[in-house]
Image (cartoon, rainbow, N blue to C red; front, top):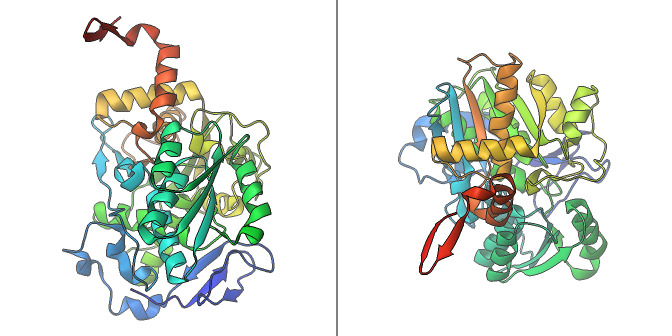
Length: 401
């Protein structure tokens, strides 16, 4: 693994030491990037060295912090060619530990928390990050203090309680949960592992970029569609592409990066359409896709910059379109996706219809989690939309209505 050379502010460029826990830039609150000696690594680290390594995100150890990982086998999820869209691939993050892509970021964040000898972690979450934080904290022997909306998917609450986390249900959105953490963390002695409020969840998420490149034979796709709440994965993948170019593994080509959000909470889409460099908080955010119900992403300025640099796009889809896409993937692809992941298919359809994509363009759609995490949400939507396709119990037999 690599020693971290320094932490760099993405706003002012200030360098900070990684020898102690850091949050955001003390000057301007900018997101911090972990930086490594890539020029030195280039001479000793090549793609051929990955052959035979464990199929986890830690196979890329040379570009991750030089500490003992807290791992549950996260990463290296399959990238599947679509059965009805030949140029489309589905990166199925639902096969991670705890059932979502959040496992990557929390594995890295908890790994560093343990290395820094921290004892208590706090996280505001729409659901899946809470589950991942609770699981990895349990594996590391750390306390996890979870703050999630009272209407978060039931599976997340049950998981967190099973892992022994301290669960706090808040009336409101993830932004309200974050406010409570911010108000109490100093008094309680918690280290805040909120989205982009520390540097290492990003390091875990960036491995998705390395995997896409490796799994496609070190040729990047023409586009990536990414369901975006906080946007850490999109930012992380962009960082990974830059690192791989510095290592000499890829050239200067980049995918067009596409953000998909729900029409009920689309601050990035609105900012993109208005040509702004940051977003305004969405008021009265409502969507069945809990992970997309983020009123304002802390790293919005980075997301919008990436969209501009990559000549990408930002698309909003309705909950109805999300549910239909979820059913389609389940019945055609055999993938039971999270609502957030299904939003990627809905966005692809819109971009094909608008001629943003040609049929032959290679596009990776990210399914960010398993539908099993949303059984209560999905069942409610299915009953509302198609009540006759439920089931009922007749004596000892369960059959269709």
